[in-house]
Image 1 (tube, rainbow, N blue to C red):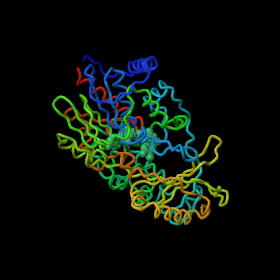
Image 2: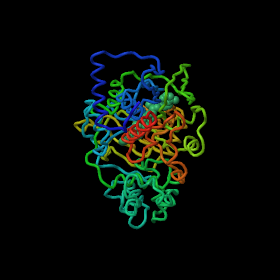
Image 3: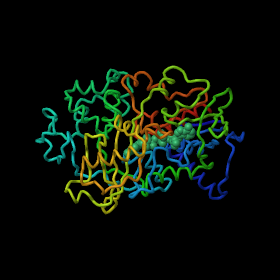
Image 4: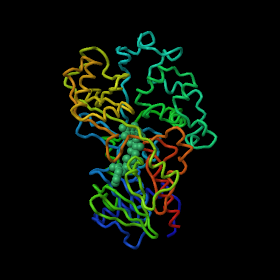
Length: 478
Ligand SMILES: Cc1cc2nc3c(=O)[nH]c(=O)nc-3n(C[C@H](O)[C@H](O)[C@H](O)COP(=O)(O)OP(=O)(O)OC[C@H]3O[C@@H](n4cnc5c(N)ncnc54)[C@H](O)[C@@H]3O)c2cc1C
């Protein structure tokens, strides 16, 4: 089969043709995954953004695609909590004008995008047992930062030390050998930049740092994230009605419906095909497989023949950031009682509290957002103990919440069996060790997913990886 490299315009044209065919012929309920013998076939494992986009791209080029998804829904780490007041996002939150693939795709699928409300401007700090408003922070005894750090809000400390001397010239520079010497523990790097012990302590409580801890994170990875923030984004955006509407529409645009509740347990690459076994006993065969499972989950999947060397190590060792969210319904607006803003940044185990507002600015619900080591501590508690702990901790930090909030949902991405963490990152030394090897095709098995992308952030990275893996498969078919 003659193929050309991926071209987004052609893909969108192909997609229109597929949509037209569906309109004329109606949807077919294809149950068998093996090739129909007329076109090359691909099994796409995982129906998150990367898997769905891969499937759309491959189908648009005439390949026969079957998507296998463990959950009973599509979207993976994009998940709108439709049953929680304000329909908050538990996974992928916001995008920006830099997400060109996602914006083009949404436009093509007629999924409307709108400005997101963004964070509140006002917040209350709770540090070293004291409640402090930002204007009082530099003179407060709770502020034990030193020198120029003292005037900074805790959430600004990380970029204060990364930004001025960030040597990464563009979004892909972090993968280049000339920066490999920065693949060291982030705490070590920050200390060398002058960060105080208190600054390091506070950075570990910051949810925007996206890491488990400074010690277990590569400085080069943190510099990579900082580089992306150098050109500020304009207004944050999201999908109207919830980000889940995008993967849902992507799935609905596929010729073959996504097969949900298919938990992949093993993948075998053979001479002429790939066979995938699921936990319900079903088996699927195709010419190629694209694996979009996070490596944190892929660790439990048997791959035959086994992956080798650095790639095998990457699957076993790539760390994922634990994120746990406690969602609250508000009975009474407690912030009107104590006069402080509802948003909080704390150095407690509960870390940060954000209000979810509707279009008019009314608070619909609250989320307590916990990262890394603190999230893991919460994850170790059973449901009852967690609820007890959170209630009493919140009462201690913010007495006015007592009796005025009610836990409606706890989302643990770390405990989620199909995610085992919110986002991948690199531990010190791992960028050198396996970044350029981890997504290489292995026999007839190809890899995509946010963890395999280079230049883009979050949801856009999932789409970036889909374009790369699709080109790889087309190259094989040439
Ligand atoms: C809390 C949180 C906040 C975020 N905030 C943002 C943000 O503001 N902006 C942004 O751009 N990005 C954000 N992201 C990141 C973004 O959501 C992800 O990068 C992106 O959705 C990942 O897509 P993916 O397809 O690579 O992986 P996934 O969405 O994880 O897709 C993998 C799929 O594989 C499935 N699967 C797993 N195991 C199996 C199995 N054994 N068999 C079959 N299927 C399986 C999963 O269920 C899942 O559907 C956030 C993520 C989280 C968790």
